Image (cartoon, rainbow, N blue to C red):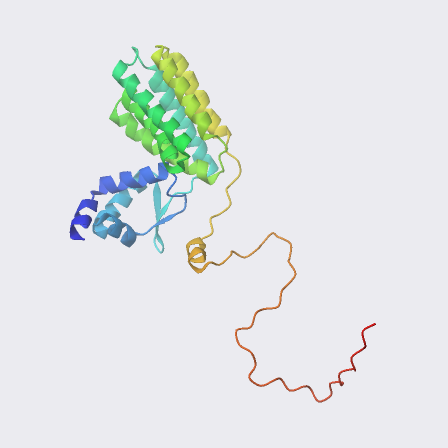
Length: 271
């Protein structure tokens, strides 16, 4: 058991990165609580290290803290969502237009391999893997085009827009995103950085424009309902006819009829 805990131990930076990866994969939702004690148990570290990781994420705009309830994943507003998408357009199109020479073959091969992994996840209908890969494509592209500094910035911005898509019911199809990624790589392979930048702008703008209304709030009692096999209360469905409740026990002594109750009428003959 101790050896397992040793293998799970991580630094605050690694804990923070794992949480961002889980956001990109859609395994952590906006507004989700991140308990210090629970995270300390998962990673096999002290709560002090967890708090340091949370502070890093707070500085990156991923989590916020409540003095009474602890740490929570942010729930971006519409205004914050627009800013995140605008920042991505500016950064990603700018980095592509700044390309002074075609990408080396090794970097193009890396982008193509990433795209093949996206398609494989789509075929397997692996939602978490697919979501992570579609977000990580932009990080991978930044690493290939610019370097680790810009990649780190884009990783956080992509995670924020992933939270936005989860919060505002994005209808942008995963297969469509995968195809648009292929178009961007094809333009880079042709040595046309301007076309790649324009395709990136259209891709990000399309994701932003496909945001709908706020998603239905998650049921905070869902885990308990699942454990107890209980259905959530109906709120918007028509009232169904009430059925007599089943009694666990019968009366040991029959109820005494009321004194003034009329006598039962004689049964009628069948006709």
